[in-house]
Image (cartoon, rainbow, N blue to C red; front, top):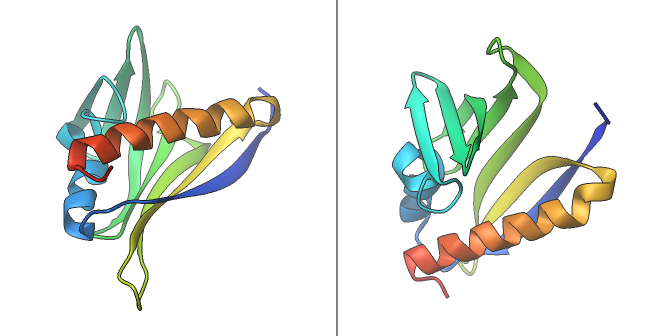
Length: 130
């Protein structure tokens, strides 16, 4: 497997942090914008897109602020890759944004960022932040 590079993208979102957190931390919320379907069993989440599925472990969460999912292999062991969704609130303006931390192979970086832009666009439509 090729080495993947870490990247971060920040998306301004017109929403309360509490509402946004529901969409990034629950299987029902994530299945509305991130994947076609999301199932959870304990700390493990299965993300389903068309005919493929990936499994991740909820590695950490801070209520109202962030979630971090670590991708796991077939035997449910953590891999070195994860994605994190972090809600940022500007202390002065109270503007809310969502910071995405993810990994992609160098030659697929543009495509990976575009995919996040599309998914976050879906999320914004869902919560009326367009």
